[in-house]
Amino acid sequence: LLRAVEARGRREDRRGRRMESLFTKLQDIISADPPRHEEALVVIAEILQQDPEDADALHCKLVCLIQMRSFDEAFRLLSSKAPLRDNHFERAYVLYRLNRQLEALESLDRCPKDGGGGVAELRAQVLYRLGRYTDSAQCYKALDAEVVDPAELAANRAAALCAAGESEAAEKVIAATAAMVDMTPDMAYNKACCVIERGSWREALAALDEAEALFVEQAAEHGETEEEVADDRIVYQVQRAHIKHRMGQLDAALEGYEAALRAKPSDAEVAAVASNNLFAVRGRESNMFDTAKKAKALNFDEAVEAKLTVPQRRVFALNRCLLALYMNKVKECTAALGKLEREFEGSELPVLVRAAVLAKDKQTDECARLLHDYAKANPKQALRVKLTMAQIQ
Image 1 (cartoon, rainbow, N blue to C red):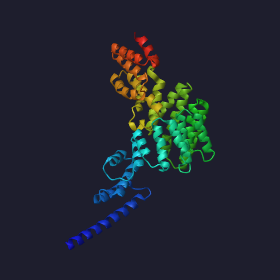
Image 2: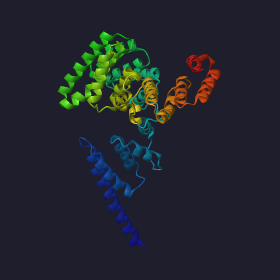
Image 3: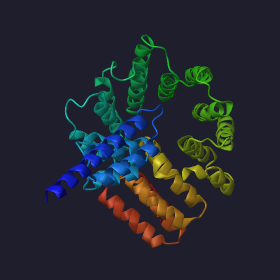
Image 4: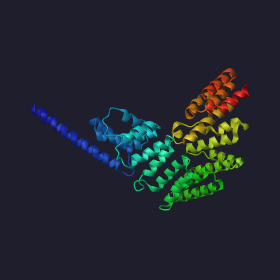
């Protein structure tokens, strides 16, 4: 028995030395510049093979997965029975990146009150994604500029204020920050967006030119390639076309949108905006096949959708339905209606589009019944529905 105990002690000593060696190796890997996360996961797997419930190793695994943008796998780890340490912030961040914003907000509510700037900043981002722009701006306002980069803070707060319809307040935030630190391309671009929101078109064009010039200057300083700079400049091209669109210069706007799409931007959000605006200019009076081909970026995935503002999502959902309807793709339009109804919950717009689908499909009685039922249930907000009923009678 004594020999057995001594043998077990020797095995535990060897195991302890092995674990210590693995953690030293892990420390070297994650301390490298840049950290080698994939290699770290291999070492973490060895540690967990020795001790599946090692809290330090499990936390390192979670952080590595987040850094590698493996958010689905990170969420599976968070949802497992693994004994992870307090992880409300990491859970909130993973849920945020998975576009599960309400759950992310719940996790943030469980974070310690003294959780630091990271918790408050993530809360502001989550609120922005939820369309609660005023609340988001308030969160950014409460952040300490000594903890968060003041230029980034100003750009984000201005974006939230602008989305909340407070473009002049947003401009003041940027101006106040620019008086203390150098203007950044993001600050300059958001300033141009604010000017667009208040409808000063020529001033907006000038502001956008200044923002683009600043971006090109700093991109050169950071050693970006010509291809990278050209790709990043497409967003300015689309925004410039948008201003021309708002000014009524439709040919110039159309040329700008088409040129942007021909350049095949790597940013799917930029491509989606250009596609949507292209369709808005061309409408149903154009060659619909050609329009649909050029506007194919409207069919974006959830990752792109998560970056859009609430007004953008609504417009895109509507135009996706209209494009399918104009091309007589009834099934495709019907499938897109579900998204439209979620975005415009309580509005008459989805009802009008569904009525148009029924009419296109020669279901006149069903169309009339749908419109009648909506008008009866919503007498105060059914003007367009009643006008449509009058047209089909």
